[in-house]
Structure formats: C-alpha cells, structure tokens
Length: 335
Image (tube, rainbow, N blue to C red):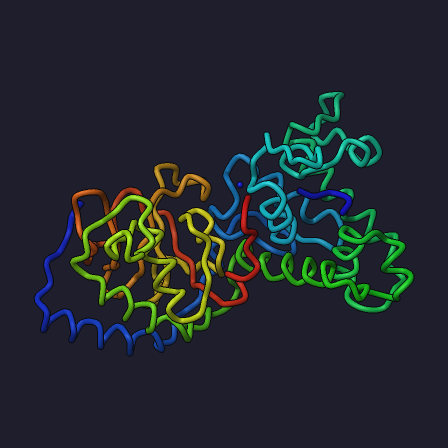
C-alpha cells in the first residue's frame, strides 16, 4: 500500500426492572426523528465530535478538495491509518497522522498551512497532503468505469496501474476489503441526514446486559469464568453485542466508531452512550454504557460498584453510536 499504516445511581426493583425492559424492547422499534448534527459545510458534514476538534476544521475543508472524496471519507482514512495520532510511526516507517512513507511524502507532501515547510508530523500539512494525494490518484483513474471514489481507494491501496489494468477495482481481496472498509467506516464520521434505522440486535444486547445487573465491576474484565464473570464498562458492551453476533473493539473510544451517531433526542434503546473528559475529542472517551430509554443506561461504572442502571445526563456525556454489524466489522483492530 502506498500510504498506510493504536454518580448517581438508581436501585430498581426486580418487577419494575422487568416491566421497564419490556418497554425498552418495544422502544427499540420506535421511529426516531432526524437531525444533521454536524459541523461545517461542503458535500458531507462531519458528525459532531467524531473527529478530534484539533483536526475537524482541516478535515472538513480539505475533504472537499475534489469530488472523489468528502470529509467523512478523509476522516475514515485518517482513523484507519493512525487513530488521529499525529506521532504514529509504523514498523514499515509510515509516519504521522496520515501514515506516509518517506518516499511517498517526498513526492506528494504539501505545505498545507503555508509556513514554508511540508512536515509529515504536522497534521496541518499531513491532512491536506492526504486529501491532495487522494485527488491525484482519482485523476489518474478518472476514465475507468465504476464508482470514482471506489476506484480512488483501490488506487490508494493497490496502485493506479492495477485499477487501469482491470478497468475498476481490481480482483484483489485486500484491495476490495480496503475499499469496503473505508466506505463503510466513513458512515460513522458523517453527520446523519435522515432517520437512523433501529438496530435489529439492540434488544438482544439490552437483554444480555440486563442479566448482568448486580455483577461486581472488574477493571479490564471480559466476563470470563476466570474473572468470575465480571466486566468493566467496555467489556460489558463488547460482550452484550457479541451475544447478538456483532464484534466490537475492546476499548470504548474505538467502539464509538461502530456506526452512525444519533443526537441526544434521537436515542433508542440499544444505542451505546459515551462519556469523555474532553467534550470535543472522541479519542478521550473514558466510559460507555448501553442506553435503555428514559434517560438511563446499563453500565459497569467503576471499581467497588456493580453493573446497574445509571442516568446518562451528566457533565461528561459525549455522544452516542447506533451500532451496526457492518460498522463494527469495518473498524481497524488496532489504531
């Protein structure tokens, strides 16, 4: 690849809890309204806070450089490459937030911030360079049949010659997976523009978490027999969705990118709700729970506590994700 590669709580009586959960399961299939809760303009607005605030304006601007890309797609590439880490360095010597290898940077790196120097370690240069490189690849394969964005991504992965040779996305499994991954992942960085469909697996995830109410918290817990069936916050959400066939990443800030992001007034039971000490940075998320309706979630809060119902409305509330099977599958295993 050319540019590639890390408290308030509520006590609920059993009878009331069962009735409550029944209402929630019904609520999973309630139709929600829609709100494009994003920033900036252009072809696609970024979902609120999906991109760290330090980079969101740059991604929004440069993501509209040409018609083959958009801000959400550019964000998905940056997340896939480095997890928005400007200091990332891979064993293959790929460097910076966009993971340019030195030879590619020497040809395609640009001075995006106008300070007279193209610096691979400066996101103000590297993000514009990634967008510029995407657009240059798109220009190389613009006459090939098929979707221009998919052809550009295929050229990014396999080289423009392969796209030209095969008249579109080449029949390479790795390349096809890369195109599918980035286009799917981009949906988690785009502001919703229509109603988000309820997750078919939401009720099952809630049911799993409800059965764990009262289980003591364990930092790093995945609920294994060796751990006494105990969980931490993201271990619980991971296990809940695994019970319905969806594999989530292990840590909360990566789980945030497992699907599109409903606004607070669009929440449905089964949505994951997230909490961060930095309200502008999804990479600073420190806690996650499963929304159950009525302003409450099931979560594993902290050492010394048990899995319980907690209100979601506190000062650390960051946002939510409506988990999709495709969205979870597209997430990188490490960023």
